[in-house]
Structure formats: C-alpha cells, structure tokens
Length: 321
Image (cartoon, rainbow, N blue to C red):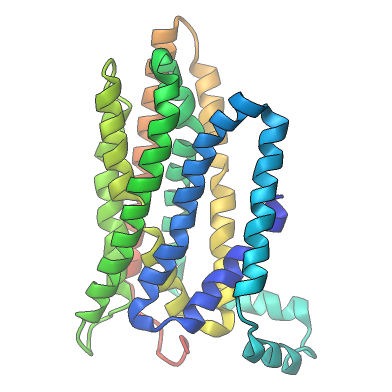
C-alpha cells in the first residue's frame, strides 16, 4: 500500500509547480499538503469505525473511500500532453544513468542539501508525535480516551490545516515583498524556521501538563498551529530551486527523507523499552522526557538547517529553469 501511494506525491507537486503561478506556489503546495492534516484527522476517527464495525470492516470502508478518490482524480485531472511529448523525445536516454545524474543534480547546491537535512529532522519530530502521542496521552489520561480521539481529530484537522494554509500565504507574501536584488525564494524558509522554534516549547508543555487533560490538549493545539506551516514553503523552495526538469526527482528524494525519518519513532521506542520499569507514573514520566528531548531537539535542529538553507547562495537562474 505504501509503495502504491508513493507514486502520487512527486507527480502532484511537480504538476502544481508547472501549472500554478510562482507568486502562489507556496499556497498551492500548502493547500495540497493540508490533505495530510485532514487524513490524520480521519485516521484518528478511524478508532470509532473500529469500535463500531471491527477492524476488518473499517479497512473495507477506507478502501472504498480510496477507490472513490482515485476515480475522481482520473476524471477531473487533465492530461499533460506537454510532458508526454517530452517523455517521447527523451525515451532514447539510458534511464539508470539519467536517474543517477538527476539525483546528483538535485543535491548539487547547498540550499537543497540544508533543506533536505532540515526536512529529515522535521519529519523525525512529526513522526515521533504521530506514533507516540496517542500511547502517551492514553497512558497519562486513561479516563479521557474517547475525548482524546475526538480532540486529536479536531486539532489535526482545524489547527493543522490553518497552520498549513497560513504558512503558504505568508511565504508567498514574504517572497513578493523581496526586491530584485533579494533572494525571494530563500526568504520563504523563514516561515518553517519560526514555526519549528515555536513548536518546541509548545510540545514540551503539552507532554508536561499532567494532571490537566484540558491544558495538555490546549498546548497540543498550539503546537499544531505553529508547527504545520513548514510544508508548503519548503516544497515551493525545493521546486523553485531545482526547476521543473528534475522537479519529480527532487520531490521523490524529499519523500525519501520522510521515509528515513520513520527510524526516529522506532529508536524512541527502543530507548523507552530500555528505560521502562517501575509503575505507570514512572513509565509516563520517562516517555514524556524522551518525547520532549526527541521532538524538541528535532524541531530546533531543523530550524537551524532551514535557516542555513535560507541564507545559502541561491543557484543561478538558468539552473532553476
């Protein structure tokens, strides 16, 4: 399933970059990226489907929904005749050699190198939250499990979507205000820099708000509101830096950074298993400390990398065209 889903993201962002005016590229990428937040909200609500219909029927319902959205895409999205013509003209090239050269070309600039490193660290933080937040909050607040499932869905859907859209709008505005001699593309990265810095203390307070469930959920909402602004501006900078010719390859590598980031929650789980012991209170405290160190450390280090990418020398204009 993961392999099948992986094909959509590189093509989608490449299509956005080709069809959307540069002045609105961040907003368009953010709008597409809100699907992640809405999907996360539906994933949280799938607990209710599981309770009502059982896990097997819940998966059948999700599969039916997936077939429906795929059918809509097939009907609504127009054919890309220009890309088809380019593909035919370049079909004689050796594919393996071409892919290797494109990968090297993507990572040839310091801006993209720092951007990929920052994205990897940011993915690590997000994935640790995605995997371990539910076990933590259920462990700390066992009497609020039903409330948590609903609130997590609302927080992800409302705060995550608002943050993503606001990040795209602000990034486009910042870029539009840049003078001719300024780096309008690189300035967009200050949005994820600020968002990641603000997200670190918000998450720390979310996992150190025991025994108040309301306070914990409040800080979790703040964390989503400031953290999820990073995606659209980062994608826009990546696509603008590498250009449309290798935009799909660049987006594929960006997706790989997220895939490698899945190691972070695994490592956190291993450390938690090694440190676990004693009663439930001690176990909760240890998990809270591990989540604080891992997630906050990822946020702050990703902010440093995004800042380095923003301050790096932009590539020549002909390289990005």
